[in-house]
Image 1 (tube, helix red, strand yellow):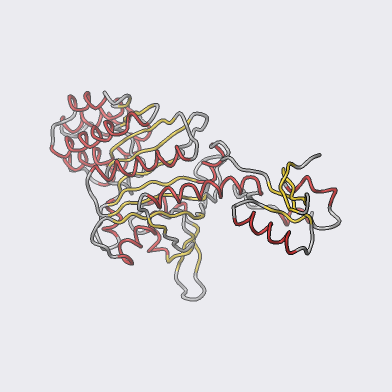
Image 2: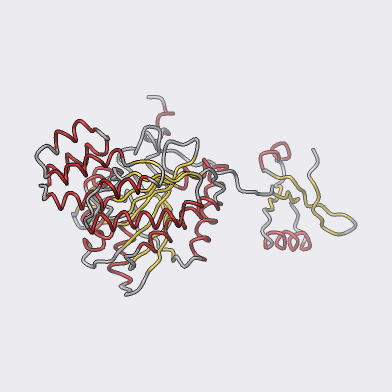
Length: 389
């Protein structure tokens, strides 16, 4: 066997080499600082948890994406997290036990048993923010503004925001008193926007519910589609509330993005989310650069009902799309045991400069160090000047 095969990584798993790692880490610091000054406290959940805790209230999709193994200490099934959000919900529900609004943020690696899409990593670096304890549309707006602020801080421009509301479909299903099997089939048909299949599935429903469900696939487009929705959907209180929430969010955010679209058939995370859902896109990428929504049911699943809304992003994908943050090259310092030189190096490093000591015998490889300046002695003083040649 070729020994080179010993160093191959599994499919859809990659190393981060210095240049990319530097971009990712710089962006991580920018975003976590942005969350911090807005009152979002950092938490660091473990990579490994008992399976029932890791998957509680999250639906079937996350179960399929989770690596599972047996814990040799307890004999119980454990999982490698595929999403940090449920872990943060557990922390809010069982460890913090606060009564008021709680704002939390996080950043860490997650693992997927299968890639979300062809060409995507199975090891995303997930970063996000969650807000617990407030059920109103104001917290939905705060979270979505925070997502847009984070993308702006990353240098992302030409943003497109998609809005939906899974509560709308749930209201129609509840009114029509559908069984779980038909609800699941309708969900799949709506995801595909398969109108002929929808017509077949809804043939036996009451006319009002049937017409409403059949209208959902065409209720997509500019925010004016909400006016059409008010005209064609039944004026049931729960339906009106969903449309009013979307209207309030549109009014708050439409000036913050280049394009804002409403899709009333969008059921992203239907088995997980409970209200408004959203996704941000940027030109040149088919995948959302950030997505999230309201997920009040997850707290209930943990035994402590807490309204919740939040978003997440893959920091690796975001760093690849974002322009490089401005950085300076390093300073090359000579190797010496001079106390004056050592003092100047420490002063420069304390000021945030990268100073690399030029170890003897490697002059030919100095170009690999990324230095654009040199620390040299002039008139008895150590001074920084441009690196020549």
